[in-house]
Amino acid sequence: MSSYAIIAASGVGKRMKLQDGLSKQMLEIGGRSVIYHTLSAFERASSVDAVYIATKPDSIETLLAMAERDGFSKVKAVIEGGKERQDSIYNCIERIEKDMHSGKAAMPDAILVHDGARPFIQPEEIDDIAALSIAYGACVPATKPKDTIKYIGENPEFFGETLDRGRLVQVQTPQGFTAPLLIQAHRHAKLEQSYATDDAAIVERFFPAQRIRIYEMGYHNIKITTPEDIHLAEAILTKLRNERFLEEEPKK
Image (cartoon, rainbow, N blue to C red; front, side, top):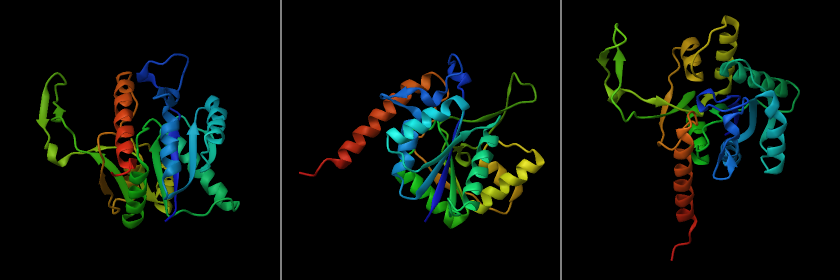
């Protein structure tokens, strides 16, 4: 089983209210940057052979230095992202194809696309999603919503219909697909200049017969989006470290 990972790390964190265009991926959690935690998980995932990162131009050298300093040997390229997240993913796909044509890379079984601002994905979860992506063609992690979800009515000041929470999920990343499927879907989207909110929606648009396997995820895999998320992230990191310590502690 071979998979490549694309990490979208170009977000400037508008909702984080950061100054001077600081990237939210560079914020620290537990003494390490958000992107460090993300890359560490993919480095430890046995299914991942290569990692391609799309980021802001002024973050490229920082991430290359981090990869060398911290032993992230799977990082094969750090490139400039595009105007939108989807453009950044396409830039990475083009780089992967370029590396394949030059003989620097082989066609992987699957490509996983992950948000750089989701630092708590676990290596075993990455491996599960990669395996399911290969088995089913596509796999997307998701959690069940805790709150009741309602439509907004025709008058936006009032609620409309209440949705059946039992049939709803909140979609996360990494989203995995067989490599040809993802590459072709993004090519179609590029040609049509069609944009979607995530990679699964692109695949659904151009390959409607392709079913997407759900991978039920825990609530730890948050995306750092607002200032409150930093406090929550610190708590999650402490919990994960404690769980890992208990697993590694020798039995008496």
